[in-house]
Image (cartoon, rainbow, N blue to C red; front, side):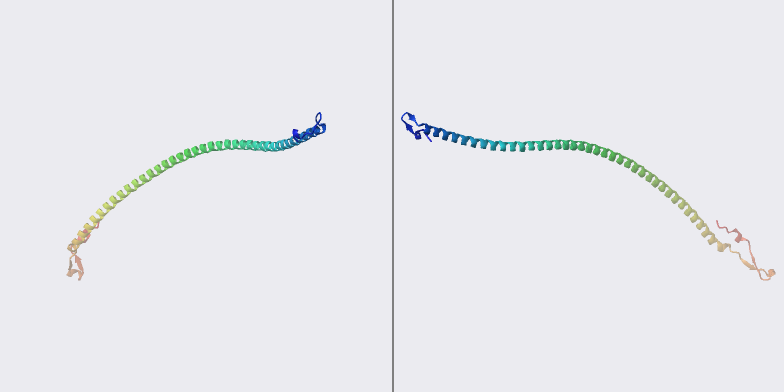
Length: 180
C-alpha cells in the first residue's frame, strides 16, 4: 500500500486505513526480516559447515605436514646413512683392490721367479744333454775307429802240426781292444 492509497477523512487520514498501512508495512518488514533471518541462518549453517570443513582440512593438512616432516627427516637421515655406507663401500672396495693388486703382484713375481728357475734348469739340462751327446759322440767315434781297426787286429790262425791241427793264435791283439 502506498500513501496515496490511504483513505482520507475530514480531519486527515482514517485511523483504520493508517493502522492497516502500518500493519502491512510491518508484515512486509517482518517477512523481509524473517527472510533475511532465514537466509542468515542458512548462511550461518553453511558458514559453520564450511568452517568445520576448513577446520577438518586444516587438521588433515597439519597431520599431513607433520607426516611429511617426519618423512623428510627420515629421508634425510636415510640419505646421510646411504652416503656414509657408499663411502664405506668405496673405501672397502679400494682397500680390497689394493690388497688384490698386492697379491696379484706377489703371485706374478713368484711365477716369474719360477719361470726364471725353470729357464735355468732347462739351460742346465741342455748343457748337460749337449755334454752327454758330445761324450756319446766321442765314444761312438772311438767305437767306430776301434771297429775299423778290428779287422787289422784280428788274430791270424796258423795250423800248427804239433798241436794236432788246432789253431794257435798269433799274438794277443784281441786283449788290447777296450771299449771305453
